Length: 346
Image 1: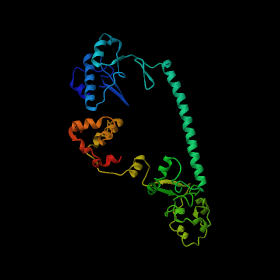
Image 2 (image 1 turned 90 degrees about the vertical axis):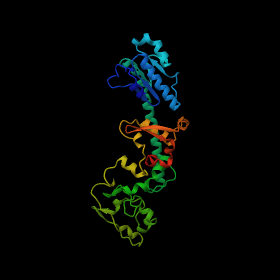
Image 3 (image 1 turned 30 degrees about the vertical axis):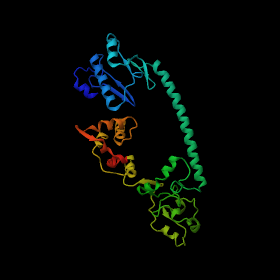
Image 4 (image 1 turned 60 degrees about the vertical axis):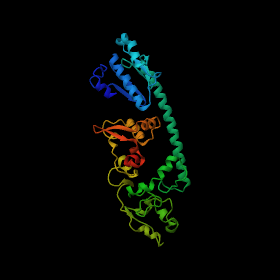
């Protein structure tokens, strides 16, 4: 559509959009087009929609598409409707629950929407609160049954799907965090991996009975005045616990992220399998890219777009893509899974 507008001098922007060159707004699967009320501009829109339909197989639904005219454009009403082949719409109309007006939004029109929004938010909050209480209560009861186990030793079996997925990430996450021992009131002696040996209950399953330290004991029971104060351990196996004890710091216990401040970017890099960059990655990332459009294009490149991409790709035999201002012809076979590299892993 942009190319057609640039190539045709007969196109005229809407008077409120001319300064910034705006002619479209897109949200989800809805498209709003703006132009001056003249037949030449409307025909350019019609031509652009037809060209898009030829390439993608996706046609504008005339029953759901409307042409909205201003009061000054009424004399050309019949010519404009014939050029665009849409039915006529009238303001105000509702879009995503909000009224679209030619004037400013008044309190009388907006008040019913806000009342409905407040009622919906209250209902959503109550459902979320009840769901969280039930879910958290279920997990807490499971922890009580499993004899004071922490998140590092609780069994993966049971619980919700999301809970099990989080538990399976423990081994991958552990090398990147550091347990800073302070007062010892928050860390469990046997169930938290504060020691260089890891979780002590896994290393010494019979440790509580051999050392006479309760299985639910906290580190504060073996810390006195900021120093270690372990009871005598005569068991030859468990005496290894007293070796390489971490330094006790002032303040409370804490868990730190190794290597600086925690960010979601760093965490994502840990669990992602990196791969080599592919030649078409500039099409998906960079400034001025609309995330939804980039995602749809990525699915089309992978051959996973469940619309009509595969028939028209096979019919054309290739796709013309533009990267860094240069047009290139890429055969669709180059988009195979074996050549996706780093982008496919994301």
